[in-house]
Image (cartoon, rainbow over all chains, first blue to last red; front, side):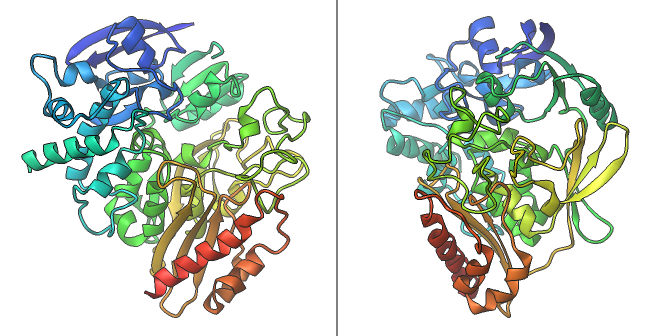
Length: 170
Length: 316
C-alpha cells in the first residue's frame, strides 16, 4: 500500500510515492540516498536518526514519511559540507566530540536545535526557575542532549563543542 | 510492520466516525509510541487516520479562568507555555521530566495520556501478556517486576501507566474532552479516564471505540507550591520508578498524586487531609492495601520518601 508525499529536504522539493510504512528515516536514507542520518536503534531510544523538521529536532525513525506533507526537513547534509562545515560540526572536530562517528550526525542536528531551544526560552528538567530564561550551562546541555546516546562516550567533549558555539554566538 | 492504508482526517467528528466504521483503524498523532509498537507488531492497525491536520493545537483560556489544551499541543509547547509555567508549574515539571527533547517535540497531549505501558512482558511478543493478548496470562507476576505496580493491580496484570504528564493532570483535576463517532462531545474527569486492570487489562481508558480526544481542560489555578519529583534509574530519559506530583498550600494542606506505582496515576483524595501531618501520614493512607511483589516493595518506602522530599521543598 503506497501513498504520495511531497516535502522539502535541505531546501530541495522532493516528491515521493512510498509504502505507507516507510519511516522518515528510511525515506531519507533508502529513497533519497541521504545516508548521513543514521539508523541506530530504530525505536527512538538512541537519537542517531535526529533530524530537524520545521525547525524542531525529532527522531526520524519514529515518524512516517507520509505524515510530513509540506514539511521542511534539514539533515546533516543540509547543515554543512566537508568544504563548508556548520560551526557546530567545526566545533565537534576541534573538541573531539566523537570517536567512531556513528552517532555524530544525530548529535550535531540535536546540538544545533538545543541551542535554538535555549535561545527561544524553552525550559528543561534542570532549569532552576520556570520563570527565568534558561542559560547555557553544562548541566542544561547534558540534560537536553540525553536523547542522543554516544557509546564511545564523547559526551564531555560534545558539551565543550556546544558551549563554544553558544558562546561565540552570544 | 504490518501493512496499512493511510488517510489524513479533516475534522475531529469525521476522524472519529472513520475509525469507528473501519475495522482495525487507529488515529495517529505524534506517533512516537504507536509506531514503536507497530514495528514490534504489538500494534497492528490496518488503517491509520492522521489527525495532525485537525488544528487542535491551541492553548486557550476557558470562561471559568482555566486552560483548554488542544489534543495536538506538543509536550514541548505545553511545558513551555507561560501560563502553564506560572499557574500549573507541576504540569510543566512533569512534562520536562519525561522522554527526550526529540520525543517531546513530537508527542502530543492526547497521545501522552494514551501511552501504553512499558512492562517488559508487554513488549516481549514471545511471552504471555493479558494486555497484549487477552487471556494468555501475565508473565510479570512472578517475573521481573522491579518497575511494576504496587497497588491497584490484579491477578491479570501488574503493569504501570508510564506517563509523567498524566500524574500532573490528575493532581490538577483535568478533564478530557472528546468527540464520539456519532458526533457527541463529552468531558471525562481524569480520575475516571484511566482504568484499573481488573480482568480486562487490555481496556485501558474510558474511551469508546472511535472516540477522539479533542482537548484537555484545566480548572482555574489553585495557587500553592507546585512540584514534580521523579525517581528513576538514571538522571534523564528514563521512566519513573516512583514520581510525585504535589501542590502544597502555605498552611501545609494540599494534594498529591503518584506515578510509577499503578495502572493509572494514583491519587487518594480522602487521604489528603493528612498532608499537614507529614509524608508518612499521607502515604500510609494512599498506599493502604498495596500488594507489592518481592522485587518492588521498595517503591512503598521510596514513594513516602519522595513525598517527604516534595513537602520539604514546599516548606523551604
